[in-house]
Length: 173
Image 1 (cartoon, one colour):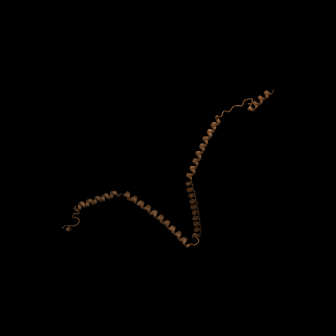
Image 2 (cartoon, rainbow, N blue to C red):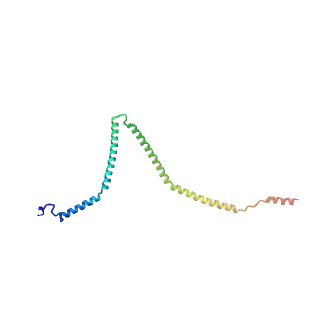
Image 3 (cartoon, helix red, strand yellow):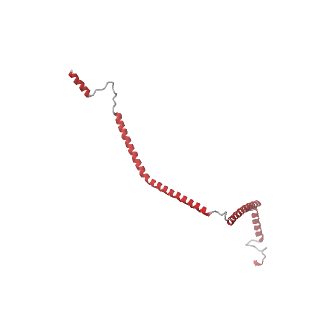
């Protein structure tokens, strides 16, 4: 029965035509307010900027294509690949030499790092020995400083031999 009713008067999904039309009108108004004319003008200006950029890129691409075509036609302006190959070989050889030097340097550094703990231990022992010698020298210096130093008198001191000779000379008289 509902199939015989024309679509304009028939109820849609439980709603009558007026309710559906009101709902669609509300959606249309909401869409119009969401997408304002300013948004459209901003989008249009962005599109024009993109078109300008695209035109510049196409011009550059055309220029590059023309340059390639010119090189393909003219044999004299082609790059000398032999010189490029020689230069590349020299560069690779220089690079390999640098890598070799870096490897040798790394090996030397690694071997030196392995020797450092033993060297530091030896230096520590030498430092301890120097400290002990310093203590011994200080003790010797203290002992030397403790020895009384007699000042020289004006008259010379007589030795035992001089005293004995004087004694004998007195008895001979």
